[in-house]
Length: 239
Image 1 (cartoon, one colour):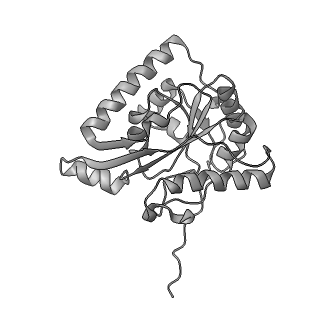
Image 2 (cartoon, rainbow, N blue to C red):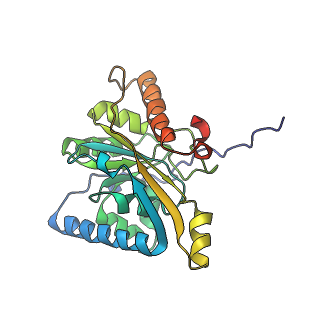
Image 3 (spheres, helix red, strand yellow):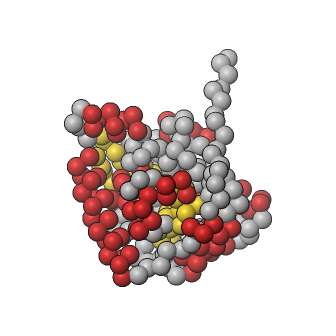
């Protein structure tokens, strides 16, 4: 029997920049830039990807809403946001802030910067403030691109937020966005087939609590919901 290949540990943000962590204010300028960005993302998705989507009727008309997604590659955000009815808020790794040009554009759009693998209370509070304002916030519970090409173990941040905010959860699964697939097709001037599947709204069962046992069970429920939307080969830890 072959040994299971070792999986690298989840990344931990090296720097600590709490001054960047906040809930972005929805000023007129930011709303306008988000609307422009949403249209641009739809155009990029149409040119670079062959996106099909199902379950779009499951999007609620208003928030608060916690959107949980799987994470396969660079094109995840483009595919998923292009299928969403409105530009969402999101939690994103703080390392993106330092990317030339793109980091500044993401900051103008406005996301909640997050220090991965660390107890980032400011980011959690910012997200909770967003839910209190009725916002739709996207989070990838795996915490990174999957290094296996399938679901990795989820972290507890999404479940913690769902319990604390009592927010409904909408799972969205994407397939075909692996970097080698997307970039491989683009090199041949072709569009990779990508599928976005929106699941049903649900809430975490059990007693609402931020205790570790509740968070662990909530994480299991969230990852199981994502797994149910994916083909078997993408289910990984949650087959």
